[in-house]
Length: 462
Figure 1 (cartoon, rainbow, N blue to C red):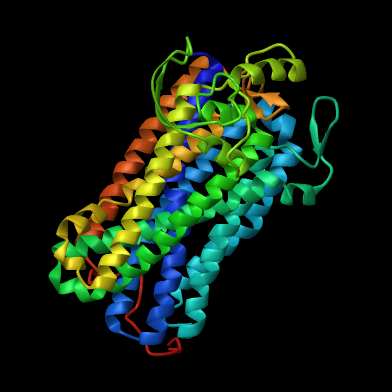
Figure 2: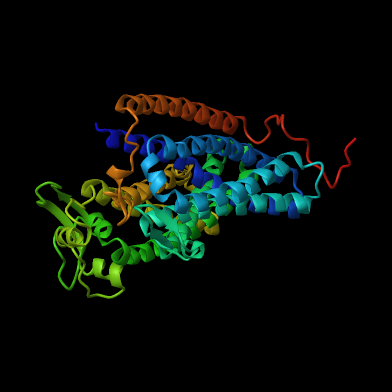
């Protein structure tokens, strides 16, 4: 392993771990806001207890997500100092706005939500959770603004091999941002929907005394999951069309398309190939589907990897510009498969609920109790496809990944921190999982040390 390889491994490991918590935080915040709005209208004590129950799980996830996010940002100064110097004047602005505005917004209103039950009116307390949900989405927006610059640089100029921002509003209008942010936001809502539905399914199966309590959260989670998963598929199609223009090599790699297609480009459901020799042993194509994905019509050529390699050499100079095709292809396929699976599961559940036969299908409920795994894996596969498919660029067309690593950090230090952070995250993951399972088993009537009993209005402090 080289210094670059170890630095990439460390950043990838930490980002994948962090990205397990971010979509749950964003999606569950909106689900909590919906559940509290429902409680505000019904004033049922059972709805309040279910709200508190999911609130505990949300806060555990939020705390671990914050810690892992802070450690991730240290990477820019540790292993990627050259990259930070090159693009810091552009990259730093949206990250600063995220920290100073969005993160403080969500953190402030989380505090008000936790400690405001006996100090705020029910209406005002409900609004605090809606503002938390808005704050989490704003955080995602600003972080994706920075990431979109890495995918499609805009609003900058090069001064002595250093990127300087010339137009902040160009960053906000980046076409990549407006296909990426809605896709990630809807994926997060899908994750939150499946998280609430998954936990609710556990109680619907195993705790009959809580069936009436968790039927509404289960149904709400399914509605959000169904709408989110369907719209994610639609917006994923928009992203694919944008890739044809902005990053055609990533699109070609995601299809293992070695040579430029014919006028009718087929899309392979599955393909078994050798990424070295480019030999394909087996392929199951859908005729014309790649042309439809790329151009919304039955005809249209898609440039292959070989043609794009020659084009990039003429444009950017000598080098190898092909990303890891095997990883890009299969991460894309797994993401798509899980997306359609989630849409089918959520729609099926809504149909069973509408027919009144949900409890006649215990196998479905058992599937749903584990279903939160599907969006988590799909989110990770989407991130892997996005970032690995951009290689060898750290900022597309401007700086290669190999040139962004810190040149003076000893390789032994990188390896040591790789091991240290991996072990630390493993311990944190075990701790977080055990804590989540503990509070799920305790159920909605567990003791709440951090919150007062339910109230009927404003209570003046003593």
